[in-house]
Amino acid sequence: MFISPLTLLPGSRQCFLFFVTKSQNLVINLNFGQRKIRDITILEVKIKFKKNRLKYFKEISQGDIFEIYLRDIGKYAYGIVVSGEIKGNKDEEILIGYLNKFSSTALPIDEIFQLVKQKQFLFIANTGITGIKKLKWRFITNYSDKVFSDENLSQIPYKVYFMGKYYKSVGDSVKEIAECEVISKEEADKIPNPLGIVGEEEIENLLIEKFQNTI
Image (cartoon, rainbow, N blue to C red):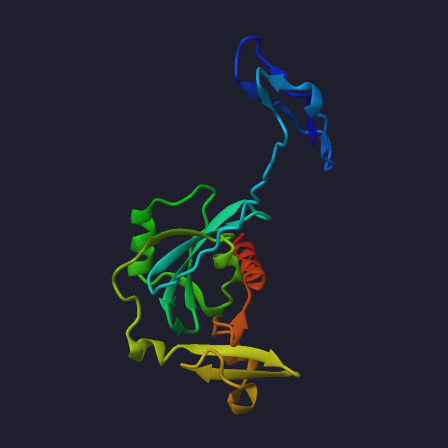
């Protein structure tokens, strides 16, 4: 950054500094000994730079709806927190249901609510929250009604493929593989929900894959 010499207006006590962005080096040339305003001598000029801090999404509640822009395919997708909360002393697992809808433009809230009410989900996943906290996934609104009862949540199946076998857990999205039931590929193909905590990039890849399968 380059700072031009101090410019004085004749007959005035005002002075102006002009800032021109040039490089990361700061060059100061104020010639203090020659710059006087009547009987006032300029001895020092202090310049402070304030660094912008990243803003983070701090609280996550049941019913929060997030918009996910899938840049690779130019589509919007949506997810709603169906279980879990991160707020105050609460730091629970966040279970998100991803809506069975892809749109070239952002959806109106009424349409999103309708899809949630009809439980139009592609899959449900225990989701890593980095994309949410760093605002990569945009918070839209909160759906006040409970999407799934505790009984419904306890009946949701999850699957994973590991070491040549398919495993299933029911009601527990992070169950240890060793405690899961071994199932056939045919049964696994009917279960859309992944077992384990899934990061936002993997979620986005799953959504893109789901969309491409519909083409």
